[in-house]
Each structure stands twice: as structure tokens, then as C-alpha cells.
Amino acid sequence: MFEANFSVPGTNGISPDYRNAELTEATWTLFFQRKSTTDPVIVSWDPSKLPPADQYSFRLKDPYGGLLGIDVDMYAQPQLVVTQPAVNSLQIVMGPAGPACEFTYELPAGWSMISLPCAVADNRLQTLFPTAISLFRFANGYQTSQTLEPAVGYWINLPAATTSTITGDAIDPQLLVVSVPQGWSMVGPGNAVVQVSGLGANVISVFGFANGYQSRQTMDPGSGYWVNMAAAGQLDLRGGGTAKPVAQQAEADPQLGRLWLGSGATGQTLYLGGPTAVELPPLPPAGVLDVRALVHGVGTLTVPDGAEAAVYPLRLQGEVSEVRWQLPAAQEGRWQLVVDDVAVPLAAEGVYRLTAGQQVAVRRVGALPAAYALAAAYPNPFNPSTTIGYALPEACSVRLTVYGVTGQVVRCLVDEPQPAGQYRMSWDGTDAEGRPVANGVYLYELRAGQFRAVQRMALVK
Image (cartoon, rainbow, N blue to C red; front, top):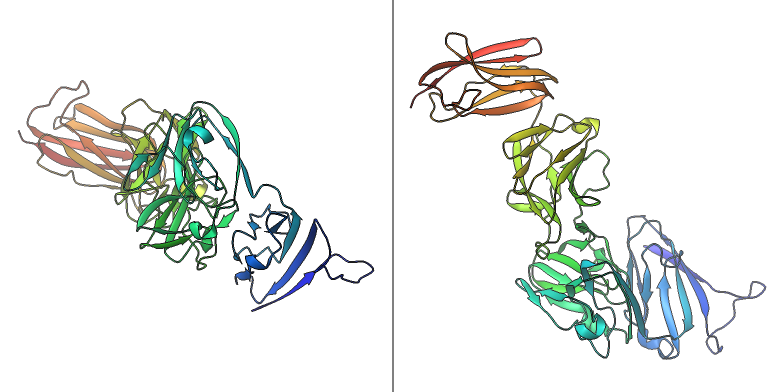
């Protein structure tokens, strides 16, 4: 429940009657008081009762003129759901009619996700974007398109940065209520900012694109978006659907580790240690930068935390030549970057250079061990290789060495400082020169700080 009242401009405290006044512009303020800051406020109106749209414009905005994401064409939709706790008033702004719909695209060179926010007389690609290289829509896979339709999202490829203004009519509101299948669809709003929470009850998540996929809570005119549906149903791109929170990544959490992958100034960030990961949309077109962790086969931007050790492969598309990381103190010792067979402990800040074709993964170390330990090799006996596990309850200098039974050094597997955690190292039965060793019994020794332990293993060919 909430209370609402109007404030209208007047003279000497008297509010005039505007019903028969010949005004060209005015602003009315609607104040409301909620019972709880978490309660949504639903504002409804009848567009047919407004003055003629060819003479006036009516927009419903937040108190800051739309800076908080509320800027609605009152002719285009009959309802607004206000979910922002900080918004306790709205402005109804009347002005003279301009073009029924006008929008300016400002797009970079290369790929962007766009939509058509106006109903235009000529919707051909060669008219709207004459220099465009290609345009794709999505329907069970990418399909080329030569026209743009309202409510549909597109990938467009441009040879150079482009600024383009279109004018036309407001999109028929009925065309902004669309039927979409279960799973992912590419869509776009009309010429007003739309709150993602008002798209409908079946929406799981919404993603936009800006140098990589990013979760969104609002949809901007002219941009394209991926929407993931839990079940087939209607999507209300006016924002008047059933109010429902949607899944989002935990990018703002300062307790998460950050793993940046890219080249030069262009890259994408993965988040380490977050809650349950949110599924990413289908891959962008070939060559567009995309970085995602595969969590149980699902591509995400967040690698979840947990007590058990686990390895999450990274899928890289586009140019990725380096990895940078930044970990808060609470995440140090919990993660490793695995490049081919090389494990790189992640602590504080650092950079790792990649070469083309390398396989990259993130390893979650798991709960920190309570004591030092050297595990039995497995398999044992072995041929041709075996794995040696060991545990470090704290950061220390580590040396893991393989000896012959007479005490000669055969191979040093580890000789470096390492953070606390669980480790596994493989030995392929070769010496320091890479030559295969003979059948027989071998010893392996772990020295970690003041800890020392020795175990036996046998190579049987």
C-alpha cells in the first residue's frame, strides 16, 4: 500500500485548472509514499485520454529527468512499475510534439548488439546503415538479415565508428509484447528505457554487450539484448509485465577475485568465488571477444566458491594474449591459473602472458588443509605416469624430488614458494634430461618449510 498526491505549478499557492488551458509545455510531479521500500509502485494511465499525439508529447520521468533510468513515452505504454527504492516521485512532462520517434545511434567499429526503437518508413539495412558489413538475427542459430524489425535484437558489423539518426513513428505497443521460446532470444525495446524486472514472470536473466557480455537490469532504446526464458511465453518489452527480480552476476562484490583476459585495452573479466553462476548467452559471432568459464558444461562469468577442489576450463574466443588477476586477501590461496600443464598460484596481483593455442583453466584449490601431508602416488605401480599429491596448510618453500633407491636425484618436480592448498603433480617416468628411466623402485620426497616426508613408487613396463 502507498499514498500518492500531485504537485502542479500555480500562482500564490493556488493550483490552476489546466483542462481548458492552451499550454504547450508543463511539468506535474507525482509524489508517493510506500509502506516498504521493497514494494514496487505501479502507475497506470489510459493513453487514449491524453491530448492528440500529433500536437503534444507526454513523458513520465524520474525526479532527475530520466537519469535513474525512468523515461517513458506515455503514448507508447499504459503502465510503469517503479522498483527503485530511491524513487519517491515522478514527473509528468508535457511538451510540444516533435517527431513521433527519433533516435541517434552511436556505434563503434566492429560488432554491436542493436535494435530498432522506431517504426520507420524504410527498414532496410542499406538505408539505415549503408556502410554495414553484415547483420545477424538469432532463431535457432544466427541468420543473416537485410531488414530490421521492432522488438528484435541484432548483431551488426560496421567498418568504422558510426553516428546515425533515425526518425519515424512510435512502435505500436502491441508489437512490443512478443512470444519467445524457452532459452535464449535476442530482443530490443521501443524508444524508452525498460526495467528488466517488468519483462515477465519467465525471465531468468538479461545480458547486453560492451566488450563482452554483461548482465543488465535496464534495457536502453536502440540496443539489443539476450533474454533467457525458463519456459516459452510472452515477453513484455514495454516493461509492464509481472514484476520479478532476475538473475545477475555479482560484479560489484569487492570480496570476489577478478581474472581479466584479453589483449591491449580490450578484455573481459571473470569473477572468482561468487555464488551460483549465471549462464551466459550463446557465443557472439566469430572473432568477437568472448571469455567464459565452463561450470558443469555451462558458460559463465563467475566461478563459484566451494569447499571441494575443482577445475573449470576457460573457453576463449577472439584475441587473448594475457591474463591479469587481482585477489582480495580472503581469496588468496584459493585459486590457480592452469595453462596447459603449468599451475600458476594466484595471489594479490599479477600478469601471465599467453601464446596462441594454449589451453587455460581455473583451479579452485578447495578448503585449506589442516596439516602438511604427502599422499601415496597413484597409480602405483605405474606405467607410463603417476600423480603425487601433497597438502600445505600455509605458504612456504616447496621442493618435491624423485630419487633412485641409491639416493641419486632423478628429477626435481617442484622447487618454488607456493601458497597454502592442495596440489597434484604428475611424473612421466623421465629424468631431468627428458630420458625414460628404467623399471624399478623410486623414492619421492617432499620438503615444505620444516616438514619432510618420503614415499615409494614403482615403475613397471
